[in-house]
Image (tube, rainbow, N blue to C red; front, side, top):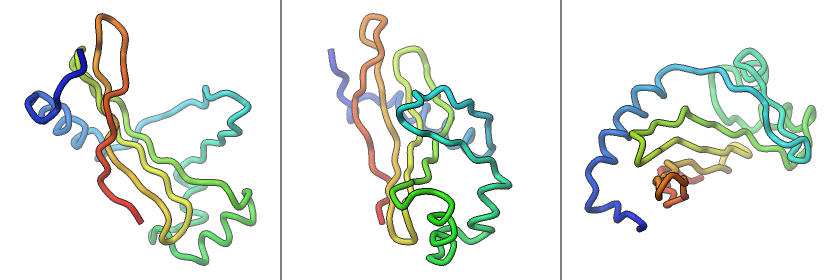
Length: 124
């Protein structure tokens, strides 16, 4: 049965745990399909393009010279779960005023994880 978020306050504890985890970085391995053409860049590579100021137009020009013009930067958090609910942050940026981000929620339905919804947090 699909849960009703507005009546399930247990999501709040998971979101609080996620907020604390997002204050630090974590390693990620590229296990994506080769067809997706995913390239993971580290913090030093990121700083090469964007320095300390995120999203300046000149920085995106430099980024797109090295990557295709349809490339996007994706931000992912760790997944936080209590065994019945799971939440993570997903964001994508595609230019100085182009991007969106939010929380992605899943629930466990008899041992199978199912997508519940995304809660948008920002859009540009």
